[in-house]
Image (cartoon, rainbow, N blue to C red; front, side, top):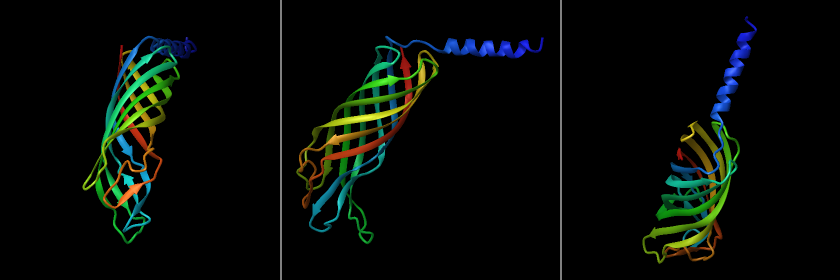
Length: 211
């Protein structure tokens, strides 16, 4: 009788795994999230005091939400809004000169993604790539800068862990790269940038409600 016990346990595990797997094509997913933005920089600036200086985007909290539709078990279309109210710091690239905060900068990302979900079980790894726009809202004392929308590309991946067909946790990492095609997009009284792209990395987590 003892040899039957491992076989019975194996059968129960296989049945449980089969029950947890499901086809998610034709379903919607709502995903609020929060995380941390690792800021990039706007490149080298022309500055009358610090010729080797550059303006950096400070690391800061980020939050937002996504709405996804699964066309099949593999392909999912997602729309995302994310916002981070971060700061701008002048880094003089000189250890004898302290960094100086020169203003604030809000990132508002409006993006569409194609997401590839690999698996139908409780644990679903995924890869995502998308594009859209970023609304940049700078606030610098004495500045002539205004809010502008710029093209943004994004790429990332992560894991979804489903507790049941309707609820899951999601852990995600991605990078955003925003094209700055105007060399005077962010200026102060004595400096302007000639940088082309600003790139930020984001680590975030949240939950999914699926229906």
